Amino acid sequence: MLLAAAAWVGPNVWIARSTRGYTYTNADAVPARTFAIVPGSPVPRGRLSSVLRDRLGAALELYRGGRVKTILVSGRDTPASPEATVMRAWLEARGVPAADIWSDEGGTRTRQTMNRAVANYGIADAIVCTQTVNVARSIYLARRAGIDAVGLALPSPLEHSTRYVARESLKTTLAFAESQLGPRPTPAAPIVAAR
Image (cartoon, rainbow, N blue to C red; front, side, top):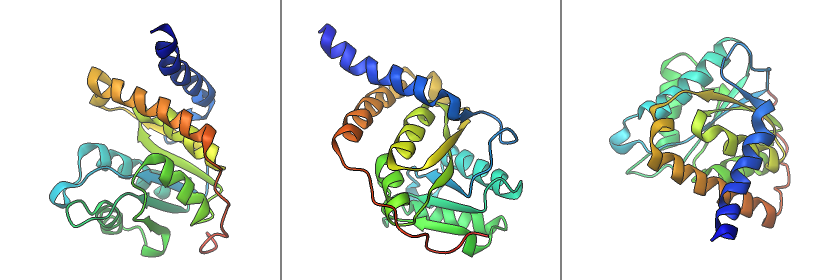
């Protein structure tokens, strides 16, 4: 039982500590990168959740402030939950040119999002926009994939949900285990030259 607890808690503590220096809570303090990465979240009936709206709002703030040049939106894109399509439309409606929004419809998990960002899009540096409760795992997976990543941690009521935090903790343990076993993605050439 003690071994099982250590196998669960250990990776969480290690990932939290190893990513602390890459985590920011203020958009004005985040070091500039070429890309913002916005991980997806379900959009039932095409409606943005507050979680996803906050992620997109953070990426938009970084873009308007000149801290990123391009935004990658990543998520599953199904008829029931067209995440990438809805995210792209939200950004375009707020004035982000279509050329500055890259869509990944195959990012069904955070690890997949980061690996595909490298292997399919040639992304080498990024600011990951996600909630405080998810940011350590997201930065860890991005950096394991080969991205010079920092994270913009967004406050959310989720961090006060014992159930959600426990689920995130399990995801972090799984992310650690998977990252030790799987190969790192081979970087692709960037699709277009960023401005």
